[in-house]
Image (tube, rainbow, N blue to C red; front, side):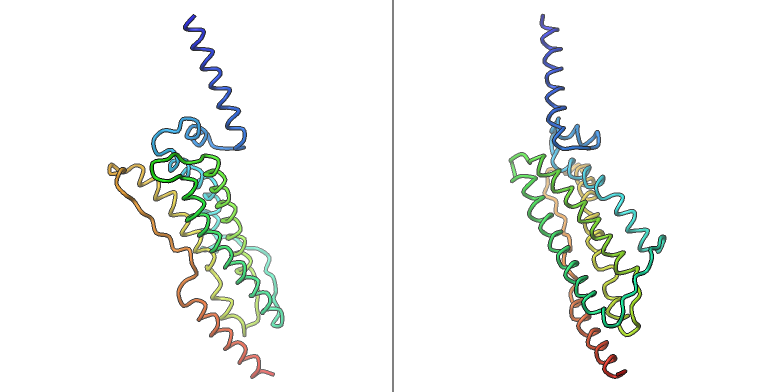
Amino acid sequence: MALIVGKTGAEARKRYQERYLEKFGKLSYLAERLITEKDAYWEYHLTSELLRSEMGPVSQRWKALKRGLYLRESLKVGKNDFAPWIANRLAEVTAMFHAAGELVNVELAAAWGAPGTPGNDDDIVHTCRLLGELCKSVLSWEESVRFVTVDSVHSEVHSLYINMAGRILDELAKIPAFLSETLSSPELKNSHELNLNLTLPDGWAESVIAATRRAADSMRGSN
């Protein structure tokens, strides 16, 4: 009788776990185990696993782009179209840095839970997927500024935008690496901190303004 009860209980737990995992959609086997078993530090193990899964292919593509290992058809941006085109790129990259900061510093921190309280698996999965989507947008942005041909008068301004959004990918890639290293440390119970630079670099805006003025002066001089 005890054997039958034990078997029935195990089957019920398995069915419950399967139904519980359905709401998350497709996950790796390790992520599913972390969610159902929730061992010590499961929140951080889950985050590391999810970010590697969500960001890994984009990170590889980003490395290939920086090395010039693939090409896309180039878009021609005329002299008179450059100002609105670059203004849109600026608005986009500014929004991306803002989103990255909010997702890491606010959403992910909240999903992990306050010290001494368990995290929220649903929020962790949701936030990691949003970070994955952001990374895809960043890569697309970088492609949009690289695979473009601009008039020589605007080449300096254009060059300042290349690799700018990609800084987000480089910084976010540090998170799963940091978590894996920290979780394998014998001093795990000590405090660990990772500082990410999710802002536009100091002096970049001033460089863009100066280059834009030089371009405007050059255009006036050629008329």
